[in-house]
Amino acid sequence: MKWLFLSSGLFLGWSLGANDAANVFGTAVGTKMVRFQTAALVAGVFVVLGSVAGVSGAAGTLGKLGAVDALPGAFVVALAAGLAVVGLLKATGLPVSTTQAIVGALVGYNLFTGRPTDPAVLTRIVSSWLLCPALSAGLAAGLFLLARRWMPRAKIHLLEVDAWTRAGLLVVGGFGAYSLGQNNIANVMGVFLRVSPFPESVSLGPFRVTSAEMLFLSGGLAIASGVATYSQRVMKKLGSGLAALSPLAALVVVLTAATVLFAFGSPGVERALKGLGLPTLPLVPVSSSQAVVGAIVGISLVRKSPVKGKTLLRIAAGWVTAPAAAALLALLGLFVLQNVFLLPVSGAGTPGTPLHRSEARR
Amino acid sequence: MTLLFGRTRALEAQIDQLLDAISEGCLVFEQGIADYLRPDPEQFEKRLAAIGEYEHKADELRREIETRLYRESLIPDHRGDVLGLLENIDNVIDEAKKTLWQFAVERPEIPAELGPGYLDLARAGTQAAQHLVSAVRAFFRDITIVPDHIHKVYFYEREADKLADRLKRRIFSMDVGLARQIHLRYFCLHVENISDRAEDVADRLSIYTIKRTI
Image 1 (cartoon, rainbow over the protein chains, first blue to last red):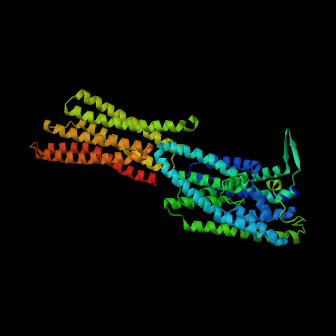
Image 2 (cartoon, chains in turn purple, green):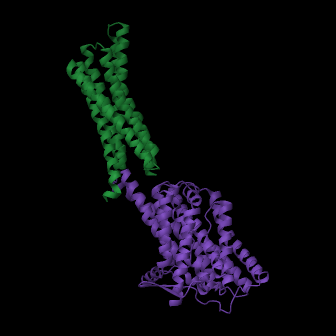
Image 3 (cartoon, each protein chain N blue to C red):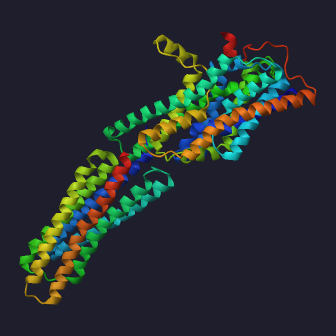
């Protein structure tokens, strides 16, 4: 039964791969600079590495928003978020945010169980949904301006520019996939952390693998399977659907998204900014779709080229619909599970208990 | 580095070889016209064979480059422009070869006093072609200097127009009979076509350059 409940988390991971991970390589595949198979392989490998090896500060914030302390409850929260993402993805073919869906589902969980939702944490997360695309747009515009000014002076052969751009897309895309795994794995597996069906630890020769690591590895693999099986449509849509992009612009988009995802998930970046006396970014799970869309809009503004307003509005509408739909689905699912299947959806845990290993360490 | 750029460098070399073939072919064309006017039939025949080889080499290289650009999905955003550029610059050497062959086949009797006029016209066409080749090389490597070469192509094309006009007026002021006048004008038009083809490619290149800088 425990494993059945975990399936919803794997499903959410799969939807994250099909959707959010697709964003990382979307522009590269859409501009035909990187083959889908290559992109899927690199994204899959690095998203798993990021999920397992990355230490994210973003997960703690999500833990503060809602602590799911019963496996059936975690099952519903993950399932509601996954269904909201896949439903919108299937209906529109546009990038939807898994991060927003899981936040919506957690708010739904809090509403159902009568636990308070910390308004400060919720505000921090929601404000990041505005900050993330705005920061991406600014960073992408700056990087694109720099690249456009530097390129003619560098006197590099057109074919070499092409080769460098391809290599850059793969390297930066790998970094983006790693950042995504690091920043977003908590969305997928965070709710299962305290109710993990895996044994506490397993010895593999000289290595000891903890329950959390096995959980994150399975989540990472689920994300990778989502990339491999269902992300092609979103990738093609992103590369050409919102605005016509050149390969150089695609590289800037991927670099921006990777940097922004990394910055929002890295305690190291937070410490560095603090050390320099600069304002810090909130450590929250942010959406790769928002980062990518923000970057595309930023470049389009610099190029003074038209952005397809209708598509942009549909994407932005998805950012509101996804958390709302996930919250509603979570409420409905929790009601059914508790009243029809008579399963406990919450334990005796205290709201606000840390969910993630990094949070636990602090 | 070799792994990353090995294939790219080979393709770059092929593009350079194609441009070399076109440039040298056009120089051979000018020498061929000079040999015909001198007259030096033996040298002329050698130039005829040489321009055929250059044209054939350029055709083969162009086909190989086009195939590789598509097969390896290179420069997706500029592939159409580059293919258009290579196809059209190839027309310049095709025109040069065709004109030289027409001299060989029809053997026009050019009055000695018109010889310098034909030679100047051939030189203007060759100059336009040489600057065009430099402009295309710059398009691949240093886009900032493309306009410097393009304006020279336009300059030599205008020069060729003026020279051709002067030559045609002289032809039709001569007492050689209408049939010969038309024959001589026909060759004047053909030699003039070299600079016109160069101008066509320069027009395209101007647009492609703007597209690359946006």
